[in-house]
Image 1 (cartoon, rainbow, N blue to C red):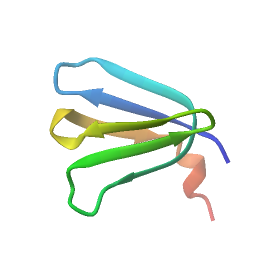
Image 2: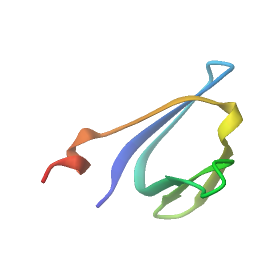
Image 3: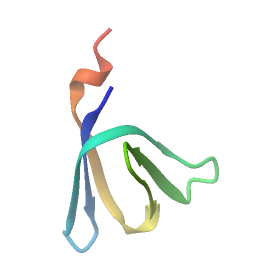
Length: 60
């Protein structure tokens, strides 16, 4: 299931992905890893202000 994911950085730049398949923060809490249909994006957590996503993925 693909969903949208928005990452806002501490410098207020934004990354909007409309085809995210999975996202998680690493066990050491250092990086956010986002998997899309064609790429894997790794972002240091220290650079992130907040993350939001399409709430439909949480419906039971």
